[in-house]
Length: 192
Image (cartoon, rainbow, N blue to C red):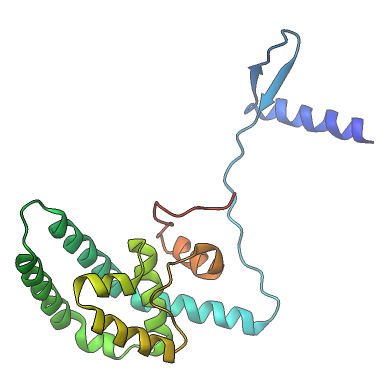
């Protein structure tokens, strides 16, 4: 039975045309390497409640995508400005204040209308896209007291700003972001 299965497998590999012989150290042996096509696994829910939670999260993520893109751009711009040689702390603070005011005029009222779940998702996704935690950003760009204030608020609402984003703990969120065209940024260890 096993011998028949192996022969069938090797025949299928050879017939597919994707098999390539790799010379082994022994001249008479040949090993075949096969490059398989990527497979996308879609979700299958156990019940309607799971499906509802997933679709609700997807709706929330699509709602906050403009804010995520703007926040990611802002963090990248501020980091680029901060890393320029010869930029003083005062110039960096002035640049940051100007960008903060610009973001507040563009999105201030809309961000205030987000519910707590959308806010938590926005914080997670900003941490995902920038590969750093929000608490350290607040401490660096604002001041430690403001970081502590927002950390206390986050803790009261079941979040932790001082936690780095872990893609393995958020499989549904990762699936949604991948569906929407936001693959996992570089810098994360992915389990194979």
